[in-house]
Every structure is written in structure tokens, then in C-alpha cells.
Length: 279
Ligand code: NAP
Image (cartoon, rainbow, N blue to C red; front, side):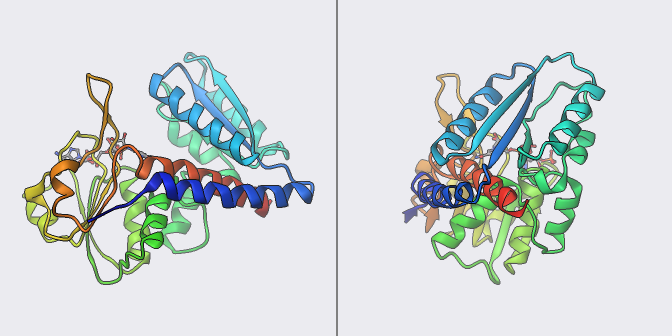
């Protein structure tokens, strides 16, 4: 069994991006990411801080727009439109969740596709489904980079996704199809989940339930990718996979923390550099 070291791989990616960022700066382009946060979500604050640190390390300028939780939809859209027009800003990210009275879909639609480094604008989602060059959302993109780095070939493999969210599960369907995997998508209404996962060469768990995927659900030598981030009452992070027991059966497995999480941020940085380069 080999542990897929997302932390190490993400570090290598960030080091390469720093070189690319320096090259852009030599040409007079200063890559910049704008992050919009609405309200005071505790977890979001941690995520935004981590993104800011990664930007600092690479040399990407970072500007945070902290909006009051009571702002109107119009104020949010106006800000996005202003950032769309600002030529010094190459990437725009709206940190979710946002308060329920706001329409997040309209907000994502408003982010200019060429600045949509999270890949949530329907134009970019559509391009992904057509296998065209686009901004792939960062968590799925990070997982694809892990497969590549560890020479895990998806072609012809039975790959089971557990979870179909817009930010993880659904873009992964396209990414894995584009690599010629045979993709099965499971979710909360799936009957006999175990029957699906048990047959899978590769299982990707993006559920949000601590240690949900257990040893008996996995076949010998399966590749297991754990997207989940669950914080227990003791403050400890766990994934959606029972790492201790599943790792005894898997051929490759990602840990939590130190697996998919760091890759997500590295791919965000990758998308900002790509956006700056394109623009
Ligand atoms: P989400 O929007 O809540 O989606 C969860 C998915 O799991 C849904 O499709 C849901 O099915 C499915 N599900 C729930 N209970 C299930 C069950 N009993 N059996 C089978 N499927 C079930 O969550 P998300 O945003 O995709 O995130 C999933 C996890 O990944 C969370 O822990 C999140 O914190 C983590 N995450 C990590 C990263 C990272 O960088 N590492 C990035 C994003 C998310 P339905 O569609 O039927 O409701």
C-alpha cells in the first residue's frame, strides 16, 4: 500500500508555480487573486487564510473583500462586475457558503469566465463537459493531478464516485470520463452502495461523513481517494474513509489531512497563474 502524499505533491506544484509567477512578473504581469467572503463563517476564514498564505508563498497578490452578511444581491453582483473590469485582477473567487438570502448561482454566473479560477461559471462547467480547455474546479483537478503523479491510469477502470455535489462529484464525473474510466456515481438515494464500491478499482469519497467508507466496502488493491474533511468534537480532522482499516486493503490511499486538501489549494494557485498568463 502506498499513501498518496498530497502535501508533498502540492509543495512541488507550488514551487513550479513560483517560477512561472516570477517569469510573468518579468514580463510586467503581476498575478492577482481577489477573494470575496460574505459573513463570518469560521471554516471559510481558515480556508481563505490558507489561500492567502499560498498566494504569498508563490508571489501572487491577494486581496480579500469581506462583505457584511446582510449585503444585498445587487451589492454582491456590483462588486463582482467591478472586479471583472479591473485589469489588475486575474482571478476572482467567491468563498462559499454565502448567506441563504443571496443567489450564489447568479453570483457564479457573473464572474467573468476568464477570471473564474474556481471553475464554477456555467461556461467553464460546459467546457469541461465538452473536454475543452477551461478552468477545472480545484478539488477535482487536484485529484486528477494525484492520479497523474502516481501513474494511476484510469483507462477502462471501474471508478465509483460517492457524492454528486456541484463542486466535487459532478466535475469529477467529466474529469474521469475524459480519462476513459467507467464511471458510476453514487449518492444518498443509491441502493446497496456497497455493491458498487466493492466492484470498484477506484473509489472517490466526497460525502462529508466521517469514516463512512469502511474496509468491507472496498475490494483488495483498490485505489481510494478521500475528499472528506470532517472535524470531530475533539477538533481532530477525519476523512470520509476509515483510513486505519481501509489502508490495509487499498493499493493507494490519500490521508486526511495531507491528501486532497493541499492539492485543492495548489490547483487554485495553478488556475490563477493560468488566468494571468491567458489575460
Ligand atoms: P455535499 O455538497 O454535502 O455533497 C455530499 C454528497 O454526498 C451528496 O451528493 C450526497 O448525496 C452524498 N451523500 C450524503 N450521504 C450519503 C450516503 N449516506 N450515501 C451516499 N452518498 C451520500 O458535500 P461536498 O461539498 O461535495 O463535500 C464533501 C466532503 O468533501 C465534505 O466533507 C467537504 O468538507 C469535503 N471537501 C473537501 C475539499 C478538499 O479540498 N479536500 C473540497 C471540497 C469539499 P445527495 O446528492 O443525494 O444529497
